[in-house]
Length: 92
Image 1: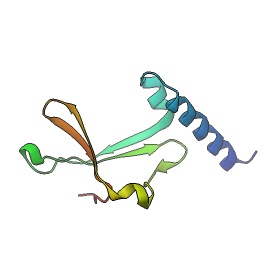
Image 2: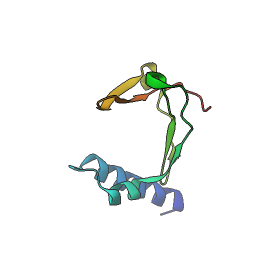
Image 3: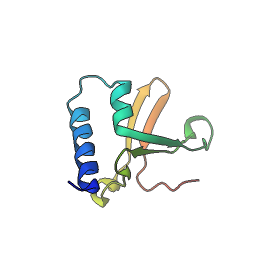
Image 4: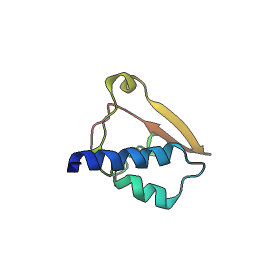
């Protein structure tokens, strides 16, 4: 098995574990994620925004396909705090 195939198999195994989890744990995140880039906050008050990029082990940063990029996704994480995925955002 060549190195690229080995890397692919390791990534698929990590993703399968991630998809079958009942609870998000630190060891699972460490197995799947290489690093997270966190950018400076822009805006104030309810217009505050902060971009993050998740770089996965074995494959790096993944851009979502164009079909998934048509809509923003917003989730209220707790009172007064929301996380929004903005697919066409550019780094500041």
